[in-house]
Length: 205
Length: 80
Image 1: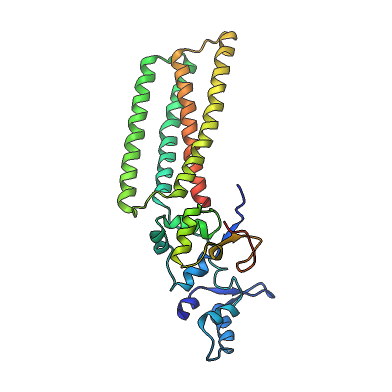
Image 2: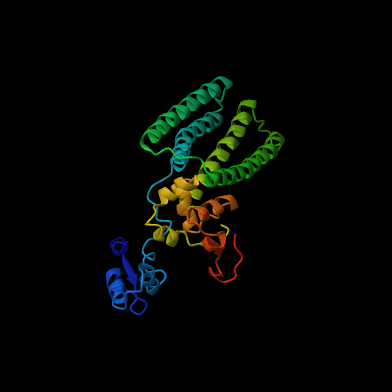
């Protein structure tokens, strides 16, 4: 057990602010060792945070399967739907937004979204350890759905308020545009959900 | 972000249990290793059920593994 301790790093020197190799700290403690003492007595002589101070508990380079999945969903959604909505609103600005072009663009974007997601998730699943979905995953998912709901509700109310106001101002919104604005609300809510997942998994909460 | 006031001695207990890895503890209690990392880092407070399972792995009572941040094990602190 002792050699394993030595590999754990260094002890912070309270006076100088520097670090003393932990082996020196242990050596000093070992000099007090008597026949009655156990390894735990030695450990009790080392400052509480000696062998833990250099290992931040949250320093975890590996991502869980679900965190990787959240990243994939976030990136594919942004990569597919930012150009999609840019195109939709460009067509609207030119006055060329037709139901046919909207439906075509929607199916193409959905196809790419599904394709990229499936490919990325297969690659992740093949290369990652399979893990059970535990209570923290459920808690993070619940939080992400909660955040997404508020964002969705906010933008939905915005659309509901904007549509009549714009008609009063003489810019009647077409059904195709209203449907795209509602779809945009949904996509923003989804991005919020994935962002919440990613942030929560990164923070460890 | 809500501050978690429940702290724990899982890292020390793992050390005392023959350098038990986070992965092994995670498998024994049925969670992911990242959840153990989060609990150890006091970023996540486990459910009562999970807390009991973790304590059971180490053969300890709940109060010996989890306690409020402003109290120490052995002192009279409010456990999880």
